[in-house]
Structure formats: structure tokens, C-alpha cells
Length: 120
Image 1: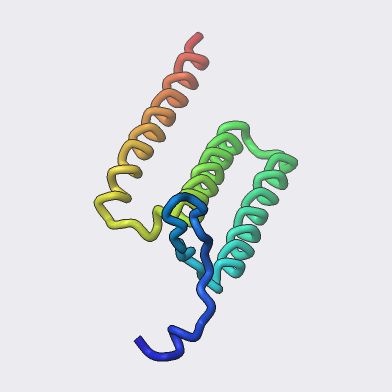
Image 2: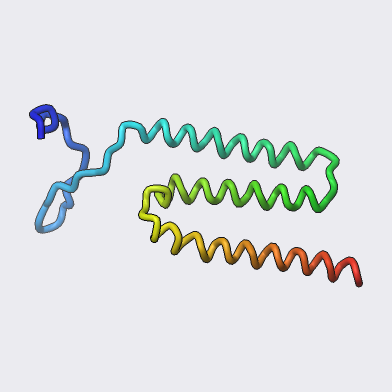
């Protein structure tokens, strides 16, 4: 390590227990930028959802648009705030595969529900 790294103030806290160890935080000076970027992306997606609600669109198209935007927003939150985007691929797949299967089940239920509604 260079001498610059040793002169930098470390961010963290003391545990306060019997050991009173210093625990260094994972401080990232870019975190504010990431949070603001995430805020603006989610705000734009929400504004699009609200705007679409006031546009006269066929009900099925409106429902599928809301489902797609909700999936986008939830995936973005999981990727950024829950740090799934920085995990190993095997961990990402073990979490995303059940999610994809659940979305598939929801889509099948919506299709069956529309079919049963149309014949009944």
C-alpha cells in the first residue's frame, strides 16, 4: 500500500463490546451519486405509470404495462440497493430463477383468468 492510503481517515465505528474493535465501514464516495441516479430512474418510471393511467388505453395493455414497469422497478431496486448486481453469477441466478418462475406463474394465471372471464 502507498503512504496515501495510511494517511486517509478511516470510516467506521468501535464495537463497544468487550473487545472494542474498530470495524471499518465500506465507505464509497460515489454512493450519493448512485442513490440520486436511482431516485431519478425510479421517479421517471413512477411518473410514466401515473401518466399512463390517465391516457385512454385498452385495459389489457394498461395492465401489462403496469406489470412490466413494476417488474422493472423491483429488479432495479434489488440490483442496486440489495447489491445483487455485484454478486457472483451463481448467486444472481439462484435468486432470479425463482423470481422468473413466479412471474411466469402470474402471467399464466392472468391469461387463464382472462380466458375464463371471456367464456363465462
